[in-house]
Image (cartoon, rainbow, N blue to C red; front, side, top):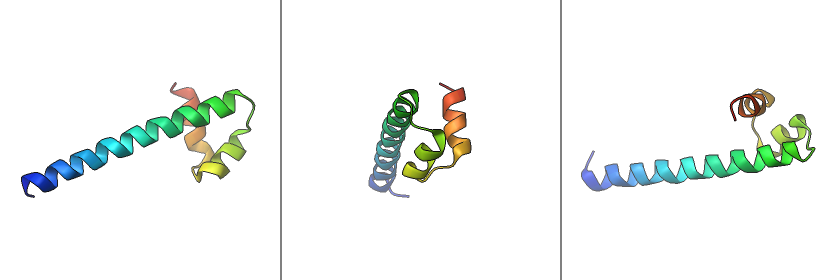
Amino acid sequence: MTRPCALAWREAAEIAEAYRVRLRTAVLEEIDAGLPITDAAELTGLSRVTMHHWLRNR
């Protein structure tokens, strides 16, 4: 992989991680405010298992 390509992949990974963190934070705030885990999973397209992991690993 060329150096510019490697830098682009690293930047893309950083953007994806930042998005994941923002999504996780927003979902946990909504669950704390009373949104059922099943609804949170459905809205995000993620599994209920993922929601439980996020809650357990705060």
